[in-house]
Length: 210
Picture (spheres, rainbow, N blue to C red):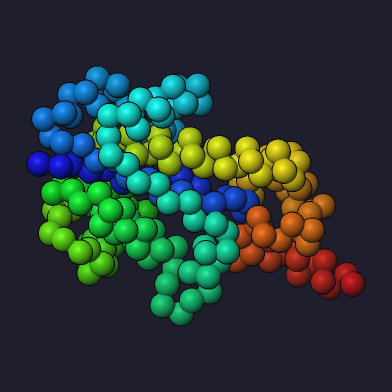
């Protein structure tokens, strides 16, 4: 039996991608993964996450989707999509790629049944789904997926930082990110999520001043 865990990183930031990651492993090999003691990435230091990242990739099959700001914006501007459905689509694509018999999914919505039903309609094979809030805290395999997602997201943000300057964490509440938005909202529009309230508010304010 192949068991899979799926999670995301970067759902809330104003800058940079949303990352979805899935890991899959044969049930008989699960002790190898458990020996690494993977946890929800938020409970681990950056150093520990980076240490576990290659080890998890070495012993599992994995799939990582890097979803750019433009794709997030397109989903939020669509009459038939939202951020939850975009995640459900990427989660289903992950399952279709890894073909597990059982998948544990970290659900972003309180309505886990609706999220599960949406995913089921997108699956190309029969996979048993366990869809829960905070699954990354309950199931080590989802914790492993969260580590792949978080480290990948951090790597992508570092690339942006190297190219565009110190943009902070990318989260709207970060003072460095606020300052970067102020100075660069119209200079580097491709790295911002333009549907975020913080971006729209600042852009509208500047447009009014012109």
